[in-house]
Length: 187
Figure 1 (tube, rainbow, N blue to C red):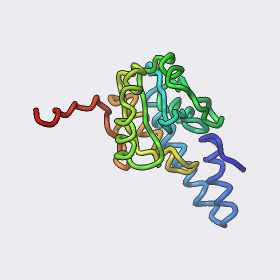
Figure 2: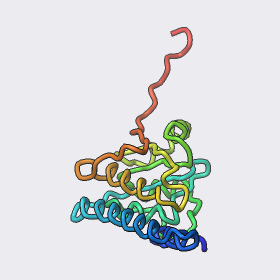
Figure 3: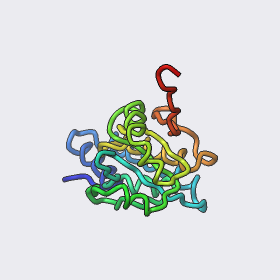
Figure 4: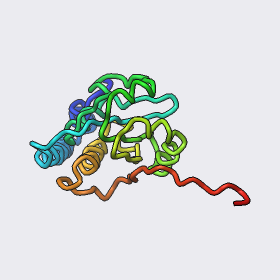
């Protein structure tokens, strides 16, 4: 079975436990993961939902699909570019500009340093999206349908609602800012 949503990932945990004779551990893990998701949902309940664009690739741009829109929703945001459970579409920068996002997440698979470097390479395009909060995020918590996706939901909860959700200690991110121009040689 291809896992396309966060709910399906939780079901897969139990299926894998059944297949490996670790049913009890699998059910316990699923319960723990569901509890952590419920904690984020409860923390952000009744708050405003910032408009979010999550970019898994920048050249050409590709928004987050499959489980990422669901993760953003649980964390108290509205994914204005991706569709839950569907393959991430390729989009153009102009189309992304028209979405008027409040928050932009750059989360290609890899380290936060790699995400930051990629964002800086495309800074003019990213700045043109008009988001007021921009983050480079460790993409490993968003790349594969595994329990680590719950870590990603907790991070998203913190990024979208920092006063309501504590920063998880196991994932990296950095706020994105315009690069500082370097003085010309000989100046």
